[in-house]
Image (tube, rainbow, N blue to C red):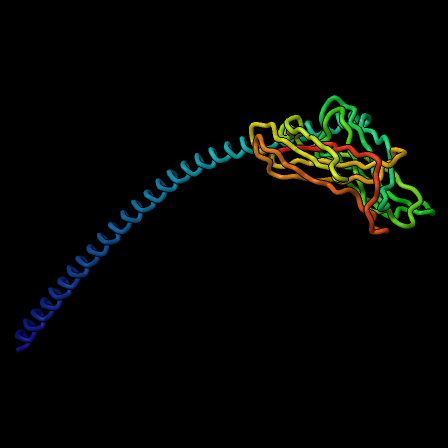
Length: 288
């Protein structure tokens, strides 16, 4: 009986061992599967890293190339801008120096007070070249020699060896003296002087029935956008009574413009003023 139990125990033990071996085999199989998956994932990760590195190198190369090209272009643009700025500054200094010489030949030959208490300057450009962008200041002082007012007028274009008149606003009441200063509004490139076409405008005038009849004719091949002229009125002693500036716009090629002027007016007395003679002066004619 004991031997039978022994045999049964051995059989149970063997069966248990076989089951354990089976479990070990299953576990080993599962472990092997896990190891295979891990190995495959590892390989995939390595491949992914390699791809990332390769893509990074390619992108870096192209970005560096683009940056390098951009830097080169930027440098070229920067260099060109600097050269332009430097050239402008040099040219500006040259024009400033030239104007200091020209200014000596821009003279105020006569100063008058109009019938309406306005300062009139008779100026001449004795240079052999046209000058643009002239700025004329008048500084007024009181009896204590304090500045009480400053006025300015522009001369857009001053033809060589010509004269013109500037009229300023009414003089300050308590002014006792004034000074004039001539400078330029700017020192930009003056190549646009070519836009001025004074030589292509002819002016005719005659006095009819106490009125001045003025005719402007455009002798240029194209339309002239603006013509400015002055009428200067004198008394019997040849003193300037007044100056009147007038502008006419958009005169077509070959056309004439007629202007009728009825004279000058005394604002305080509210009446027309008799004058002994007059003259008409062309100031500027230009196209945009």
